[in-house]
Image 1 (tube, rainbow, N blue to C red):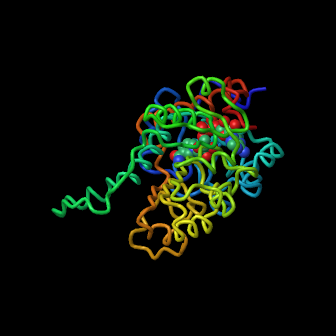
Image 2 (tube, rainbow, N blue to C red):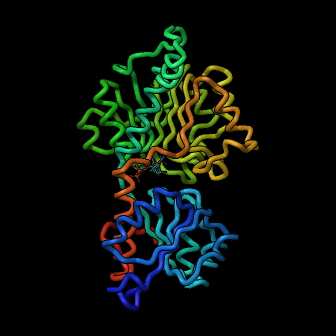
Image 3 (cartoon, rainbow, N blue to C red):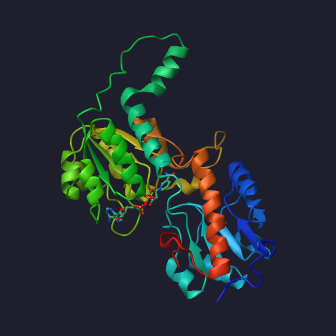
Length: 344
Ligand code: NAD
């Protein structure tokens, strides 16, 4: 049965967007020309207090830090919302069981530009290693000294990848191009990657043998705090850890200890456990209450970016198109051809 009473007229279907930034509005408005939905944009996060803002929308579109727990889903269902459309790949912030219970469909954008995230992970590695951010500032102040900028060749180094889905695979290809030895751990091995030269090993082997570890698995019960005191102890001295996946993969207190002891030589994070209180906002005039992020940012060998790995023109275009197509497909067929896009 179709979810829509008038499947060919998308104007009757209002989408309420939460956590929207100017670029979201620009890309979704641009691509809505071919879909004709009614769009309502809210800058605020979706949470139990903000559900009330929704007026006559049958669809909500949410992002990584929106709170989509049972309380919210129950209220959404009571308001007549039939679809929760995630405009991202990760869905750890959505209670899928509650969505089933309240008969609300949930869809996502499984792969919009894996290259965008993989390339950002590489950018973090190169920045941390060759310290281009420091060189840039130095030279602008007419300081042409090289002291403190010493890096290492990536060629020949061992890179360990945890999670070899769309992003991990794209990342592996680039790492192989640099002439690195690429190890990978996933719950399923990928024969195509093995043919390309990636060696699938145990998680312990990743920790033990990698000069650089890059996280590309989803956040779930098995992967929460996969980087913790015990796993850090197993790693090589001066290891580089890169996380462009989800903040909860890293136990923040343990990496702070590892950095203080010098066990971790470099840390690059595009995601952070408590990021929903910080990221996507200009807090430059505020007093940050989160001491852990302040401590992390105080290390000279830590690079923090604010969840920007996905942020390319190509990715935002794909996100808008796939999100609208998911919604259209659910409204007309109550299904989505790409099974990975439909969560409930
Ligand atoms: P994907 O679903 O294609 O791949 C995830 C891989 O992780 C799969 O191969 C899966 O088998 C593996 N996996 C699952 N459980 C595992 C476990 N316990 N141990 C090891 N591997 C496990 O997802 P993707 O598109 O490659 O995205 C990966 C993650 O990147 C997403 O979950 C999301 O959180 C994150 N992401 C971040 C950004 C950003 O802007 N920083 C953008 C997109 C995605």
